[in-house]
Every structure is written in C-alpha cells, then in structure tokens.
Image 1: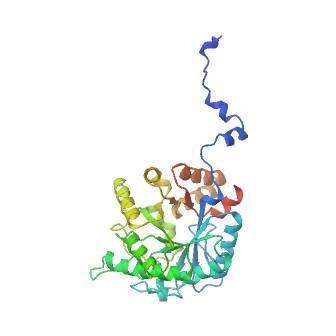
Image 2: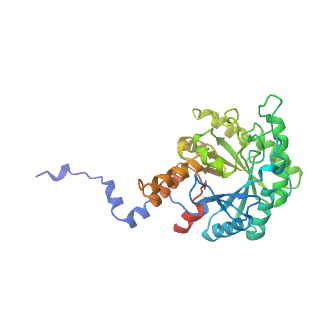
Image 3: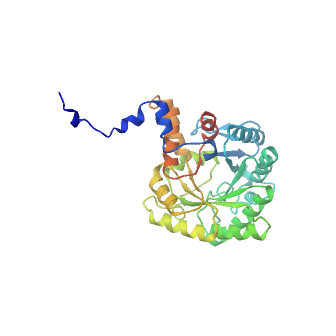
Length: 329
C-alpha cells in the first residue's frame, strides 16, 4: 500500500469534477455580444443564393438581409458586417459601383439601418475587390500593379458614401499603406466624425480565403501578395498595428483568426483599443466539411474554435456562426 504522504496534495482535477464546477472556474467565456455576423448581399437576385463552399451561408437578397439582421439582433449579436456583391456588368477597372450612392452596399446599409436602427452595430467592408473587373482591392497602374495612392483616393470616396448611407463602422480591408489616415480625414471632413474605423490591421495572404471568392463573386486574376501580409511574418504585424493606431484606428483586427492566434495574442497584449478577429470562410468550411463527414462533433468544434480565439485576446469575433452560436449561449 502507498504511504499517505506520497499522494498528490495539489489536484487540479478537483476543479473539473462537474459541469457546474467547470463553468464556475472557466477563465474564458463567450457571450453573444462578442460576436459579429458577416453577411453578403447580392444585387439582382430574387431568392438567396447558397454558397457551395460555405454550407448554410448565402448571398442575401435585400429582403433576406433585413431578416438576417433582425435575427442577429434578437439573438444578442453585437454587429453585422456587410459585403456587397454587384451585378457583373457593373464591375469596372475603378470599382465605380463601390462609390455609387445607389450601389448595392450603400442600399443594403440603408435597408439594415431602417430595420434595426442603432440597436445593432452596422459595419461595412470598405474595399474595391467586389467591384473591380480585375478583382484586386485597388485600382491598377499602367503596368497592372495595384496603385496604392490612387486607391486611397477611391477609399476616401467609399468612406463618405458608406457613412452617408448610415453605417456605424467602416472596415477598410484592402491593406493599402496609409488607408486608415486617409479614411479618417475623409470622414471627419464630411461631417462623419462619429463613424468608427475597424482597421484590418493584420491581414495575411491566406489560402483560407478560398470560399470567400465565391461568396463575393470575385473576378480576381493573380494574387494579393504585394499588399496582404506574408504568413511567415510577425514583427511586420506589429509595425502595421503601430501605423494604424497612429492614423486613428478605433479598433483593430487580425484576419484570419485560427492560424494566427499567436499574432492575435501579441496584438491584444500591445494595445488599449478593442481587438477583433475574423474567423474566415476557410475556417468555417473546414469545420462544416469535417462535421458533414462525421469526423468531428460540429457544435463542440464551433464553440472550441471560438473560445480559442476569445482566449487569445479577441474581444470581438466575426464569424458566420454568430447568430447560431448566440442563440445557444
């Protein structure tokens, strides 16, 4: 028989004995107000269009988008991030539909604002990729390269029309140098001082964006490696963070979330502004596909991934499961 003194005195398992005990001592908690729902609205359709690579996610009509916004609000979700998908014939080299006051995104902002008012935080993607015929996030120069400074002029116009439509937060996602400062100036000079900027501070050139291309009807030719970040780099992210904060970012974001939890933790430790993370299309698709095969428990995997992102330091999580998860919390 083992002597009593050889038994462990410290037993961490005591705090894992029951669900109630584990709940009481949990260090990280998810709440519906931590979640933001990304949503796509497509011009010229009469019924929602399923996105094949993202089971359960659709390109909304204007009517179904309004319904989705109400459902998110009722579930306790904090906000909705809107992406516009114009008709192909409206795409051009300059992304003109993105700055048309009657373009699909601006119309959708007004629709959602009329439906939910200020009860749900309405956010908008501020980028040209959905609207350009070449699919890049900016305008191109004579040699076919993305022209950073010419693109900033377009972003300033986009900020104004989105703010005019009633958006609460703009999300510049194009990764152009100086974008936050130019957008802040454009908003302030047009009487939109109260519109916040959620800076896509850290956005990697990721393989996990694949399903998103279908979601927004991307026309991309080539890749975005000259403006999105190299997945190998971390210090670069902290430099981007310092620049965005200096230019007036109200909130910052890391995208994707799951493959970059180390970067997210570094960012969260470094700032005193709210930090968001975007659980992107490929992350969503992997869980849904594995669950459909019966390889993982879908509901548990969803909560585990979101808890991991929250634990790493995200105060807000953009996730396509936002409304569903909010209902279960």
